Length: 385
Image 1 (cartoon, helix red, strand yellow):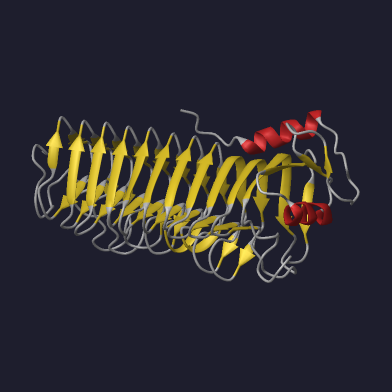
Image 2 (cartoon, rainbow, N blue to C red):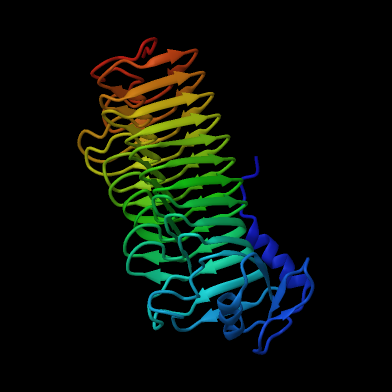
């Protein structure tokens, strides 16, 4: 499992070993079927190439170039909308909306029938009134990101970095999604189908819920992914999971996320969530009477932890802040070969609070303060102080 930022490192390497070519404007020129169509380091050349691209075409950007978008191509859209199959190889390039004085627009928009693949590229600075500050994927659209940074994007609605609408699909591999801001799901917002592998979601901020990720419908699977240092104002400092469908993390880490609200410093679960071989650690719920420093699980929700750890989380707000580890209010929880240890809260219990019994298989709740389970409405089977 590699939990590092990948594509920025690749971009730096490209900048060192490759000189910038095509620094003047002009139309794109073909350089061979394997390499795709070369796009000079010019915003005009970029927009022209995308607008004129044939279905299935590959565009190859100038190595380490920064393409500055100073105005919208059409209202709210920085580049031509993608309505067909298109691959863009970034070669360490950046596409950025320039500055606060520039009109609001997102960078990419994938329409129904569009299939956009981005490689080795940074998508930066998009700002939109609505969803998808960096990239928006409509129903029937598909997005694939390989070695892509999605950074510093903002949405007044959901998905500061990437928003996937119901019926849309997004695949992220070796990506870095960071420093994005939105109402919900500041890094990623998904109402469709989402797959994330070998990536990092960090330092995103949600003004409501889901600092790194908000899943509201459809299915999402994240593997070998680090979710860290994200924040939210209401709940789910790292992740909010809700709506029909399910969310699964495997071989991943959800660490050092914070909500100043009252539910779920690491994860706010309102639906179906499975954590397998995943660590939830160092997360904080800081609001008055906040609950679930690591995980908050609500009525009707299903939470399964298998071979996982809930460690060193805290509920440290004023008043009756409790359950630094796991808080469960009438949901279903299974602990299977899982450790809940060294969590803390303002009032007991520091480990686990629940209104109903857990299913416990070869798991332990230990070394939490002020208590492991004492003070809970129901004491989890096998939990002692």
